[in-house]
Image (cartoon, rainbow, N blue to C red; front, side):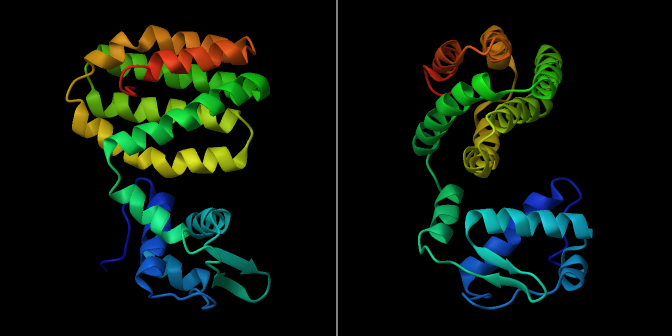
Length: 222
């Protein structure tokens, strides 16, 4: 079956495929999406992946879940689907500008709102990033770097900010994989990432903001 998604990142792939189907007009505004069992069979994933994908689409404003009736396409703002399309074809310059704006505010909010659980997650991911960087494991290093910044977005405790950042994270990862064939830059930038984590631990939003400026100052590098 062509629609069956890969096992890694299954939820994100389901979201992508459903967005593409909505963008192409396969499912129009007001139309009901297939039932959970049908989508589970279509995409070859479990119920939890389908439900999480629907939750993400609902947060994006693309669908509405009506209890007892099902999930309906509900694109009230005509720019929502084109926004997804623009991400797929965005230039590095445009993507970096959006990333900079988001990461500055996210770091500031994370320093204010982080929990001990957030700190534990961030510490683990930063260690994973360093290990991959020191062993020149480019793909693993990029994955850990993206996960680290997503975890900061989660620590900000603003679902809209976090969802916006997660929406562009796949494109950031893609651009990194095109730009970096080794991990030299990730090693160079590690100490600044340590400073960023420490500023979040210290609940110092001004320092967190400055750390992000230091990280992205030249060309929005990792």
